[in-house]
Amino acid sequence: MQESITVKGMSCQHCVKAVSAILSEFAGVSEVTIDLASGKVTFNTEFAIDRQKLAQKLDDAGYEIT
Image (tube, rainbow, N blue to C red; front, side, top):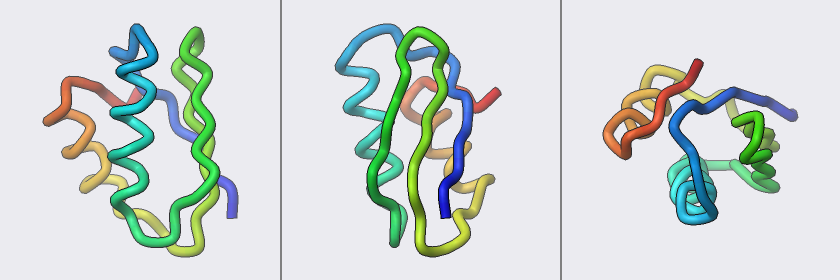
């Protein structure tokens, strides 16, 4: 299934790679696409993702789900 979130705090390609890496830590996540200008992050996943866990990991890295 395809999911999308909006992430605040990304400003460069390093941020894009960091957020992609965080999402890739979750089982079943693939095809992460990030629009840096809007902060929209789209990805495919085979399993439901624990949004609180994702939000915490992103927060720890300096980003925020809006």
